[in-house]
Amino acid sequence: MKLKSTSFFVTGLLLFGLSISSFATVEMSKKEKQKCTACHVKMGKKDLNDVGKCYEAKKSMSACAAK
Image (cartoon, rainbow, N blue to C red; front, side, top):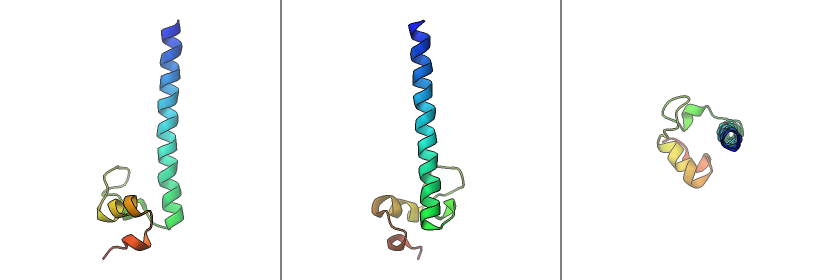
C-alpha cells in the first residue's frame, strides 16, 4: 500500500512540474508580446533558435532582437 501511495505522489509532482513549465512559457510569450516561434524552432518543441538562446541568457527580447 505504501508503494502505491508513493507512486501517486511522485506522479502528482511530475504533472505539477510539467504544468508550471508550460505556464512559464505562456507568461513569457504574453510578457514579450511574441509568438512561441520567436524563440522556439517549432511550436510546442523545447528546441530554441538563436533568439531563444539569447533570451534564455539575457531575459530581454530587446537585447535579442532578430537581425
